Amino acid sequence: MDRREFMKTVTALSALAVLPVSLSQAAELTKKYSGTALRVMLGAGGGAFDVYKKMTETFTEQTGIEFDYTTLPDADYYSKIVLDVSTGTNSFDAYLYTYFWKGELEPGFADLEKLVPSIEGAPALGLDDYPGQVVEVYGRQNGKLIGLPVLGDATMFVWNKAQYKDVGLDPAAAPKSWEDVVANGKKLEAAGKNGFGLPAGKGYQVACLWMILFAKYGGEYFGPNFAPQFTSDAAIKATKFMVDQLQPLAPKGNLTWDFSEMLDGLATGVSAQGMMWPGGFGRMLDPKQSAEANNLAYEATPGASLLGGWAVGVNDNSKNKEAAGLWAAFLASAEAQKQGPAPARISVLSDPELVKAHPQYPAVLQALSGKLAQFPNVPQSGQVVAYLYDELNAALSGDKSAEEAMADMQSQTEEFIASLNIRK
Image (cartoon, rainbow, N blue to C red; front, top):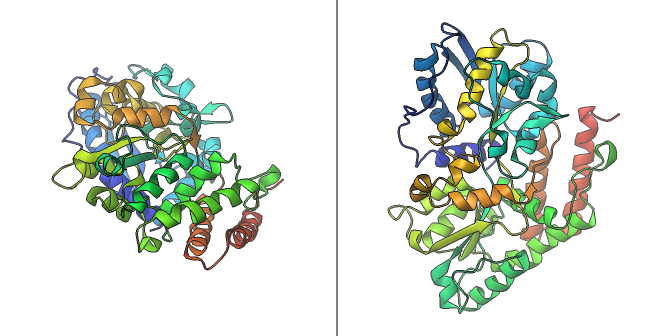
């Protein structure tokens, strides 16, 4: 599963538990921009994107602002959004984007910290309502607030309380470190259970887990002038930990596992421990879809959580910049986030009524509030991740040593970075 398929799966699963939206409690918005038609670029992943479009129907009713959505194939989404703002084409007024594109988007995006407060009737930015470094990572680039988080997404650790109890582990105690995960996994393995649902296929999830471990060891993807750091001590240690410690605990056949198999493993009890994204919780905690729904507990992944998610930004050269800014502020507002598929605001994730319906929210807030691992922040970072999951699969299958895999990762990434012409 490549990044396009991964994001499609996550956004679709994120939306599973969302009911038809109603924002009747939201404050009335200005009709100053009535008759404006905003062009908005969306990916084709469905799920969360469809929910945001549905939410915007209420916005249109209140403001008179209409929308012309362009839903692009996922393979083209990144290149089209960069092309639109970097070449002066300016075909779109607003966009949803992922944070590891922000370096290329910043020059063409409006500073929402300046724009939104100047718009009549716009919801307040409420930046102190976001946890930890979420605003900085999703939205800031070169001191400029180019986006507001709308879909909060960070990895969490899941364990099976019943299986913990079976082997004498405290079912209420989450592992505090990855070493604890392994120690617990060995006890589970000794009792004939699968100690950890490691995704080891050629897909995004094996790379995601590696990124968390890479952060644990203090790794940095690039040194000065974008010099790759994949043969560093941190990179080798992260790879060896996966090969030597986690792979022996994994279910058979995990060399083809990605998101769906991880989720299936936890939902069926095949995996006693594993990593999961918030998008999987709708199914994982639903007794109708998960045999282990009542046995699963969860917290932020030990040490750091990998940040995913989406933000909303506005084209700085849009002729409809104020109307687009009003929509961006609306979509990121607490009232709208209450109806969204994966909120990023503290007030929403801690709302007692919402927590009753979404018991994972406090764990998501915990994950977003702590140390955050991130994807490589370079142009076309998906290619770097593709190199990474290929090499990790080779190491986990035994085709290469950890050192060989990271050496090949280093050389491929060096060649790729050189082709981008981003060095000084």
